[in-house]
Length: 424
Length: 81
Image 1 (cartoon, rainbow over the protein chains, first blue to last red):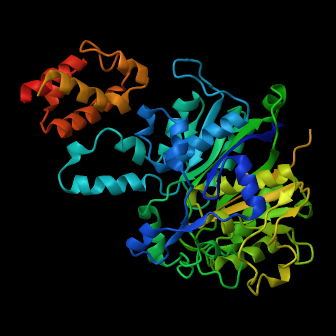
Image 2: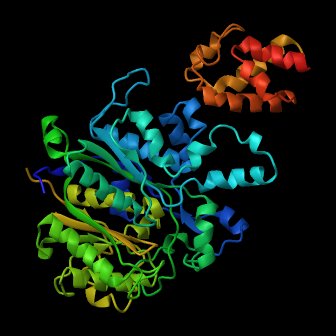
């Protein structure tokens, strides 16, 4: 590998419990839940009637987008636009004027989505079925193409490098960050916006509700519904939003005196091949462990150096297996297991956006020196109980140097990357 | 319907598609929708649909292709009323 180092210089987040990194940091520290009761899901007879949806989207979007753009953006495109613009500005760049023809040939974007565009499809399908295709208008393609969440960013920020969308179910956001990291590492781009965005349409969530993988037992207590690592975990809680990081080649970041949040030491993606217990819906533990080990190896660190894990931890039966996989992959016991938390306990499972949102949480913890508490795991699952000391339930103020983040998704796909506090 | 009323309604319909709201304030019948108001050409489809709904008329594809200025839109509507 070459000597190019990749750092994080900008963060943008719109999550169910906060918009903007300052508010999000506060929400993480205070354990603010973004999970609310959603009456429209009850009307649609969903089993699970709670979820995490960013608040005041319409008001926020009006500040970010001109009227001629606003009306062609669907929900997930608004999230990705807001988070990308925030990350770009946070890194110290200006939003270019449309009349300014300078193009950022060395900057691109990899923004993933899981089921993006489903809200738009829900509106057009009845029209097409009733022979009214002529009435669809001009914005259906840009809203339903898989790359809808990345395509607009090219225009907003005059990006001239690769602008694309990846999709790997719940592994998407973390995978996007790894793909962007690799592109910069390979010298093909100087900076990349990376992360994920996902809308909150019932059409996105319905399939999960039908599978009975959502928690339907806490409709009367929404903030207690997302319960990763608990004995009473009964399914995940759906969430929406976007988390986007600006990754940058260290040389460029130093040259322009940019604020450096963290360095990415390395990452890995793989699939468990849907064998040995792995399936469309569950990971092959061997694949998970290999992915984590490959990320550690690529980073050139000793597993003992890892201070904290931001887990995938969705609040299903897979949580205890995930903890055991971490212990095996990092070759540690309950005695020397790193701190571990689940951002999903606060915001729910943001699906294709989850990795992006959780990478932002990971980087903020490193940069600001804290490990946020996981809500609703007072009753730890019996398999996880030996690791009780490592499970952070209430936010602790502590400098951490190395944090590992992983995401796993339907299709038996895995992604894992390692962030380190930046040292020149 | 009076031309003045039609003009006002057309201006209202054009609002969300115009990049600079100021440009619309100074618009006349001679104003070119794509060039002067900088409306993206693909959005003409949406403007025609909105006109059909507002004035309860049908506009053929050929008629839509002829539209360039605000005056063209008004003539199209008045001609069908």
